[in-house]
Length: 409
Image (cartoon, rainbow, N blue to C red; front, side, top):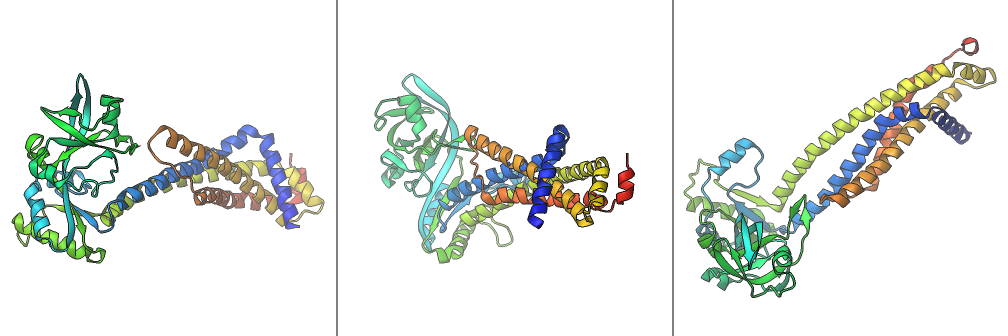
């Protein structure tokens, strides 16, 4: 019997919606906006979560980075860390020499945007950096063909480079790149390897870069740049002890007194992920606020429209009560109408949200991953809004006196 009453209420609600199309659409706008926001933003955040997790975990759970500035969280933090002494190649060598718990130590320097030329062709704003021979281990770069930098290249300060695929496609076209010489700044460098394409992320091209040996970069491109030291702990269970040992080596070498804080930052995959989670937590808070406001407005509109509907259908309610309908039947009818309105708005919001997420994923580098739980949550919240804000109009309708209702004009 309850199923029949529910279906009857749904039919009546749909008939009321169809009879008042414009009013019904305006009623649903708040719910639609709220659910659309939830689906679209949650999809983008989930996609970013998955992407960032893969990128951060590619560092390795037993790898950490020692950097001059680390993660900057405010303007004051930026100016404070900019005053720090740079981390030098000698600092990196000291870590490699004295750290007993370190399995491998490498470094990356710089990241200048430079003009790169081949023959009469040239490219502007190419990211050029210097690295130790273990660049492929301390980055997420995979080699397509040729070879990577080796220890001899770095020891000799060789004029060689490994390039991203965009350099080849724009400057060399169909030519065999290995062995060709590029002019970077004032000097020429021989291509020894080409990396596989990594595409773009958040609008940043990840294929237009060049890396040269660390010593070469320091000598010919940028002497005063700070080195980011990549350290791989021998054992993951000794991760903290390894960090402490590296910290002691650098503090002693850089003459940091006991009472002073570190003049460098240590970042692990866990700390970077924690910072990202805090950042995303702020985005979630904004999402909740915006969605809550939209759903609150939508709920109030539903309640007002249902009150108008109760007034318009006063005689209908009186007739139904006169022929035997009970209070709970009237209450049930208007509750179902309110919930149906809200679910319909939620369904439209889900479809629009999925469309927005797909559009964002196709026209921008932002990944979008629509999760089933976000769709179900959107519909669940919409139906809850309809139920909560439909109770008062439904109770008002159920309490109407049948005789007074029949007399209503």
